[in-house]
Length: 192
Image (cartoon, rainbow, N blue to C red; front, side, top):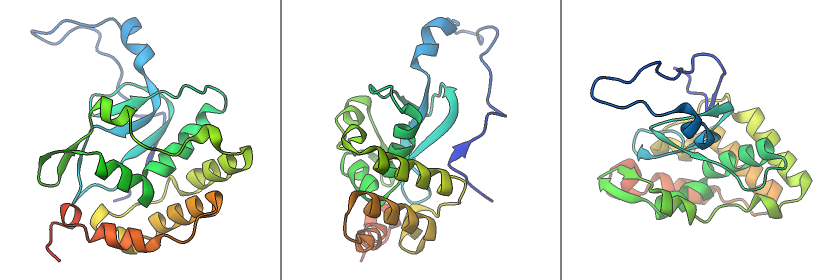
């Protein structure tokens, strides 16, 4: 089964017309400013999940993903795609895993304050060419199927993500980090 990390405009749920039993209905005018196109997983099961972040074609609200709004509104889609690519790269995964809140074994959470302070690629410091290159890599790879995290060492799509990051930022090949991260016990649930 294919697991693209870009969602289409179709099939999105619409707001409830009335509250569920025992709950109050929040006004859409209060919620809609919280919508976003860039979503980061609130919880991950590291031994089965494939990605941490998705970019959507239209703003959405979610109860399972944190919506991320970028301060820099210029080139917002390009910047959001760049961050989605970064957070699904090996370097992004290392940053996320290092800042996780453990819940139970491979189940981890990300709290808003932790994500707000997460060290990520500062897209505002990238040149226009670098942002275009990374957003283009996102567009080229977004419909490809990523392997679960424990299989990332041999995942050709994740290798392409890492190669795109390395090329755009002038970094050396860091594929050895992907191999080592795949062997991390919290991810593969095996002792070395």
